[in-house]
Image (cartoon, rainbow, N blue to C red; front, side):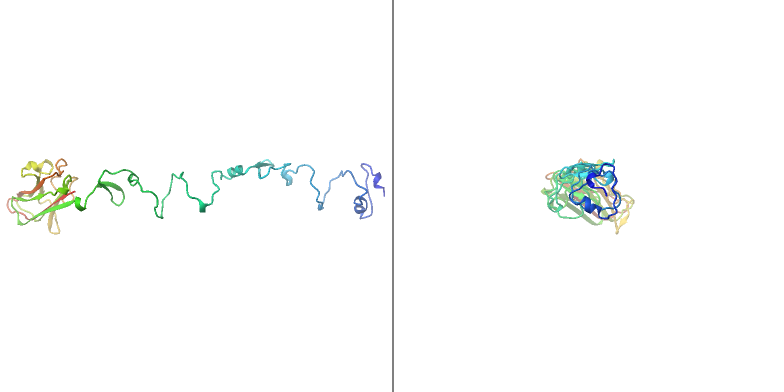
Amino acid sequence: MVDLDEVATSDLITSARSNLVKDYIQDGTHKINTLSVDVGGTETITSLRAWSGDTISVAKGGTGKTSVTADSYLKGNGTSALTERTYEEVKTDLSLNNVENTAISTWTGSTNITTLGTIGNGTWNGTDIDVGYIDGSSGTNGQVLTTDGTDASWQDASGGGSSMVFERKIEGDLYTTTLMPIIIPDELNGKEIKEVRLSVASLPTGASIKVDVRKNGTASTDSIFTSDTPIEIGTAQTATNGLYMVACDISGARVGTPNTTIDSARDDLASDDVLWVVIVQCGSTLAGTDLVVGVSIE
């Protein structure tokens, strides 16, 4: 055995003793300065010594870095290396850079919401909704919002004290005559004549029944109908519930087929206006029977 103090570079140390390391390397008085061969096998490193060798690469299980900034994160860059990323950069990497760190249970909402889906339930506690947002437009003063079951629209108000239907009736055989006048009450001043409905229990023979509604007189030029043409009830009508019915309004017939429509230039009502219902023809061979006239004002 060669004294370890005399070991030179490239010398080979051999011994048959199994405790060579214990006796000669760990005895505190001798050491080997240079280890020139690889250490293989599955030896376990149990020393708590600090690593002072080269930086361990990512491929070998390390970071490839000599130091890492406090509170930063490491991200693979695709070239077997790691790069540092800050907290904000990591949020961007995860597409969370627009997410605010707020608990949903304490979130009160945002004024930046511009698009919503369907609100299925809940109770409205906000400010009053402007009428312009109900159906996309604003009605005029006095109009009401109505719907046909699909769309909403603004229409002139009707019903209550602002609307009225006047009815006049003659029972039995009809004659060419002037019926009782219809006196328009003051609360209907400024309203419009919207509809006239006629019905008879039986049709005349030889000629149709013709009925006119005139405003403020009995001359034909006072008629509320277009071209001063009366409504005609004749053989073109079909009996409904035993009555032959026709109707006339500003947009055309609602029941039956009238021969005329209301003149929009004559449908307005003013103070002291009076309507007269006039039979101008009731048949030439046999008169019809039981005439009913209804005038709707809104």
